[in-house]
Image (cartoon, rainbow, N blue to C red; front, top):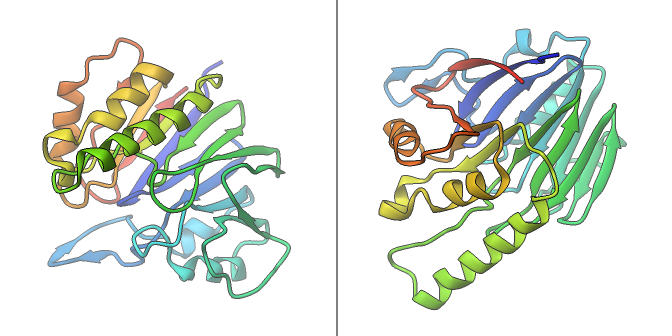
Length: 245
């Protein structure tokens, strides 16, 4: 039987995901509906989003400003069943039992969700979550970073470290995959996403970490030919996708 999944793009690497019994939020940081001089709808978490009887899981892959905002801790004043799964480089205001600090070799079972962490090629961790018969992978800043202004040795190490981490994920069947497609990498923007799709064959691939360059999601989709993976093109902050898995 197909399962319905709702996804809301919150900006950068931030996503709101609703499954049958759970709500998951990843890497939320931009807590405003205004970005520059453009009004963005539904791109910030408001009180209506917190009115739920579903189990609420909040993830932060690392503490960089564009992946983590301490405002997430205020949500527990509105949501009864909320848990935080955070990379252990993040400084937390307290040690509540609903806050889990994780490293790259952690396995947790919380509210019928199995959570497995992997490493990153930057700071923090990446997450694989098995939940409501769906498997979700959010890479955080795990990517094949190939910078035009770095040395060949640096870029080769990034490639090696990225591929090593992806090899650990190959045994899992992934339904939803969220990975960077970063235009700052110039003509190398597609390397990590293409490699992940070829190695893991997720059902859906959702680009992230592209700032205001929404066109790159279309460019990536046109560049990567895959018969097994649907690539989602994102056109604006707050865009919602209703997927069948």
